[in-house]
Amino acid sequence: MTAKEYNITVEEWADGLYRFAFKTLQHAEDAKDVVQQSFETLWLNLEEVYFEKAKSYLFTVAHRRCMDQFRKPKTRELNNEHFLETTNINNTNEWKGYLQEALKILDQQSKTLILLKDYEGYSYEEISKITTLNLTQVKVYLHRARKTLKDYLISKKQIL
Amino acid sequence: MKHTDITYIEEQIMLLVDGELNPEQEQAILEIIDTKEAYQQLYADYLSLKLDPQDHMVYAFKDELKKTIPLVAPVAAKKKWPLYAAAAIAPLVLLSSLWFFNQGQHTPEQTVAKSQLPPVFTNPIPTSRPTSTKPSGKTVKPQATTEPKKADRMVNKSKPNNTGLALQVPALPKEITAQHTNVPLIHTPQANKYDAIAIAGSPVNPIATQYVAIETIANEEDNTDFVRKYETPKGLLGNVINAGNWFFKEEKSTTIELSLGNKIHKSYTITLK
Figure 1 (cartoon, rainbow over the protein chains, first blue to last red):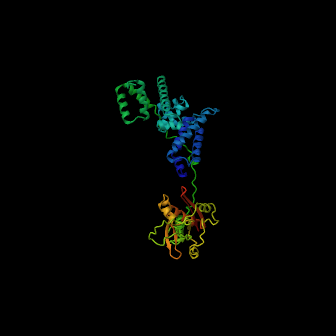
Figure 2 (figure 1 turned 45 degrees about the vertical axis):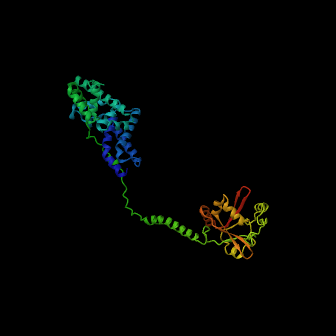
Figure 3 (figure 1 turned 90 degrees about the vertical axis):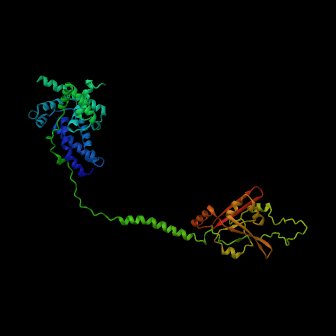
């Protein structure tokens, strides 16, 4: 990959990478750090990464950085303010707002799988490469997460 | 698992929502979904769980991530073709020069394998020639002195001279040896008519005639026979001798001994100059 292709990659995938990191970490600054670290890693390994594989490489690095962030001791509470501002639940769709809220009840791995599938449109096989899970694990964890979301939203709807 | 199993249907619906089914499988599960209202509700629920891409969330610091590409003035491409041409021509020139040099070394005058070498006369050994072909009525025994004794062969074999030649021929015409001293010589210590005949009729004939052509001529002056030997090394040995002679350009000598029981015992010394 050349420097020019690297800049094209930044322009093309920085937004998606930031969304993925932000949804995963629920913190804007941490998400920004993850994006910076991911692209820095890509720049350092520029000669070894093909331009066509840049997106998958970036999300793999970002996923690992997010896992590292979760393993760190939490010294502060999650900053949901920015998340609420950007998603603007009430104005868009009540159901989608509940859905975003429901994502918080998922474990980190399930949430990552949902984000990679729905936001980035990766296939099961691509997700398995990014998350280093096998195909069956991806399928089972993803279905389990969707079922959890469905049960949560149904119960929420019944309460309301 | 039956297609009516709710767990199987739910799994297929989730795969359909995730877009992991091929067109045939999609058609099959859609037909199943249409059969029951519960399946349709389940399909609608999972469709509603899909997250919409939030394109309004953007990363505002892209410029910090981008790297500036240094503007380097385009360097004129160096014309390296003369170097490549020289590198390609150099081995050709070297090989050609070697070939021409090799051709010069293998002129017919210097080639051992050629048959233009002058004959080398061995020592004129007096042999008994019958003065008359008419039968005399007497049994003429061959002179014992014409045939070398076994003791003489042993002496010649055990005491080779220092020059590497098996036998120096005192009666060898000097003008011949002086004229052709730069050609390999083959001297046979006890070569005579008997030996020529013996070699011709012996099992070693193919080997002997391959390297030495023997001809017996009559010397009318002193009524003796000369055994004229043409040294005509042929085949692989001749090529090896040529190659060695050309390569080392120095005098080499080697001794070849032929033995066949107790009857034939020959020792040849080949000198390369």
